[in-house]
Length: 112
Length: 113
Image 1 (spheres, chains in turn yellow, red):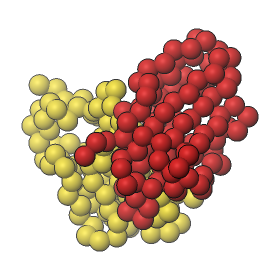
Image 2: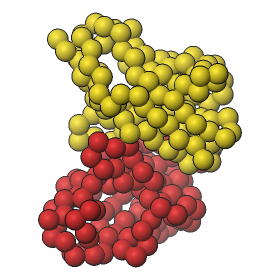
Image 3: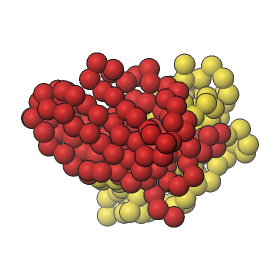
Image 4: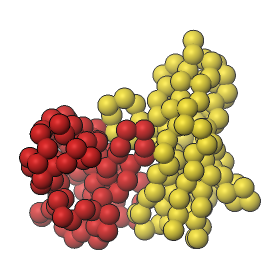
């Protein structure tokens, strides 16, 4: 069975600082990995996905993530945080059958 | 392109009452999901449809929860009777089989008093 662990339920950064949200996965087969963002009172929006092509994946809003098989990680980064990035971020893993498992989420706070 | 539509957005009911949630997926999406999201947690799958067939309902508490997707388009999720522990956000998502992408609706926030 596949699962993800998001390290840190809450991350706080200053505006303009690097954003790093951590995600480690467990999967018995080559995984498909995703990052979603959720703004208050809204559904989840796909930021980016890894589906066994390039290991460095670029997404929307300046975010990117790198798939590291040796570390079983798929951390999300953004070079410079913006106030509008404040939201809840979810990492998810799928084994390819549209069966997706989500992490518990990381709440990102951006300080002015 | 219209997104996934859910209604109602908010619902407050007393325990032991029935409640129903409705979802209209993105046009052309054959896969539909219902998720439960508790406060501070990630979504947890309740049921997945491919067209009108429920292909994964292993996490659906069948003693009180039911779902249907007539004609393979709209779907309804029902709880009868509701319990205090059912208070959560119920998310609907849709996608195209094989693309591994899911598009989420805004959710229905249920409060059971």
